[in-house]
Image (cartoon, rainbow, N blue to C red):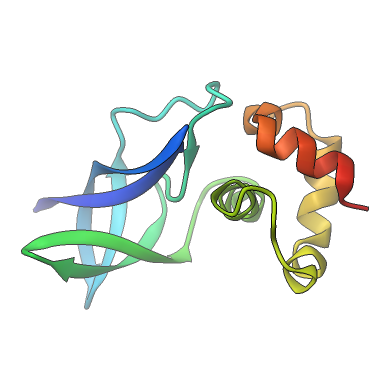
Length: 129
């Protein structure tokens, strides 16, 4: 049975958007559909994607995606890093920079990941060594 799950989107401001998921375990759901997702839109920064398995918490009778368990998405860690950087307006810790060093390199070299053009990411990539 499909369920509605709230997930975060940063599109100027951070908002929650309903996506469709399927329960696969205790508090675990696989996101199966996001009608709003457009990976060619460099301004829309999503926390989770169709194909992601996420832990959800119930709040007020609604399910909210909380953390990533696993994913089938190519370069998924790059997208996780992008969401973190944009959500913190480019102010992430040195520890996070070191943790994401391979993803930073991949993003700098990529021509496929449109979110690289997001203003916060463009500015941040120029600063990060």
